[in-house]
Each structure stands twice: as structure tokens, then as C-alpha cells.
Amino acid sequence: MKVKRGFSAVAILVSCFTVLPAMAATFEVPRSFEIMYVDLESSRQFGNDFKVDVEEGPHQIVVRFNKLLRSGGDTQTFQSEPIVLNLQFEKDTYLSLKAPYVSTVRQAEDNVKDPQFSIIDEVSGKEVDYKQQMLTTKSGLQNTRDFVAEVERLTAKNSMSANVSSSGPDVAPTKMSDDVELQMMQFWYNQSDKVTRKHIRVWIADDLYKPEVSSIQFEMATFWFKRADKESQQAFQQWLIKE
Image 1 (cartoon, rainbow, N blue to C red):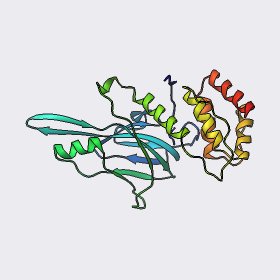
Image 2 (image 1 turned 30 degrees about the vertical axis):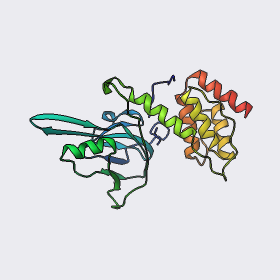
Image 3 (image 1 turned 90 degrees about the horizontal axis):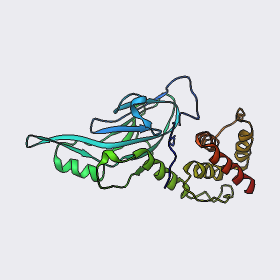
Image 4 (image 1 turned 180 degrees about the vertical axis):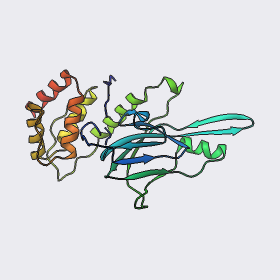
């Protein structure tokens, strides 16, 4: 499958489509985990491997269990597959990933297969809800894998297969292809109500247009449109005409 690159921050969750004057929230993990990507950008652009600052709104954060243990004089590395988290950050939110302390090889091996953790709102002390997806285990050297492309494919596949609410708008026809951006534009358009669909169409004709009341559907559809190349943008516009 061909996946276009050049992702500039989701998640689904995405700093590209909501411009705020300053970072408004924080996400932190313990030393037994690492933050790999925020909206598919390297975590180091946001801070470091263990703590990042993000803007208010939805974000996709990729983490993994990553533990070094000494055994018999040697140091062993234990790493799980990347875990894709979809999180919603409110203003001044401080979310922490909490995990049991790992001190033995057996505990580390178990966490490689099935990382155990919860996410806590440090302000309220309550556990927060989140959506989680995990990449499939692959053989071979891990440093040769393109994790960004794998996360993109996983996100697009699961988003397109999500069930549309029975009370929501009718689903427009979707042509499946290897074009992730086109699939995501179609998906978010299908998730929109009639008013939001109209806003999307008007925005495509005038990218300076801003509806008085926005929505996640509008933001995501326009985000993916901006990210798409001209060929994909034209394909989406042609799809809208047939819709």
C-alpha cells in the first residue's frame, strides 16, 4: 500500500487545525515508557521522550513500553509495539500515564506482549477515557520499520471501518483506495451532519472561510484536505460532485 508522507500534526486528535497562542496541556509517561510521536511528529519537537506539551484539543499520541533491565551482568532492552492513543486535552490539562513498576525480566516480558497502564488526570485525580490501538508485531530489525507509515495505515483502516451512528447523516459512497488522505476526507465528511457538510464545501471554495460554530468533523476534514496533494484534493472534489 502506498502511503503519502509529510504528516504535520493529528491525532487524532491535531495542532495543525486548531491554532492557539500557547501550549495549554501536558502529557507525561514514566521511565518505563517512551513517547514516540505526537500527531505523528517526533516527540522531541514537543519536549522529550517522557513529557510533552500540546495545544488544547484532540491529539494522537504514540507510546510504547521501553524498559532496560540488568540481568547477569548484561543489560537487556524490552520494547512493546507502538500503542496509538487518542486523547482529548482541555485547557490546563495534565494527563499522566501510570504503570506498575517493572523490576523483573518476567514482568518486562509480560509488558512487551501486553503493556499495563492507565491514564490519570492529575488535576482531578480521576482516570480518563481514551481509545487505544496497537501495531501488529513484525519480525526483523525494528530500526528498519517505518512506524509513521504503519500508524497512518492503522488509523485510516480503523477510522474507515468505524460504524456510523444510526441517527447520523446518510453515508456518501466511498471509493476505497491506497490514498490515506482521500479516505480520511471521505470518512470525516460522512461523519458530518448536513450543516457541517455545507461548511466543508464552502471552505473548499474559499479556504479563508470560517464557520461561526466549528466541529471536530469540519476541522478534521479540512485538516486532511490541507495535507493532501493536488491530485487527492481534486479526487475529493470530484467525489463530492457525485455524492
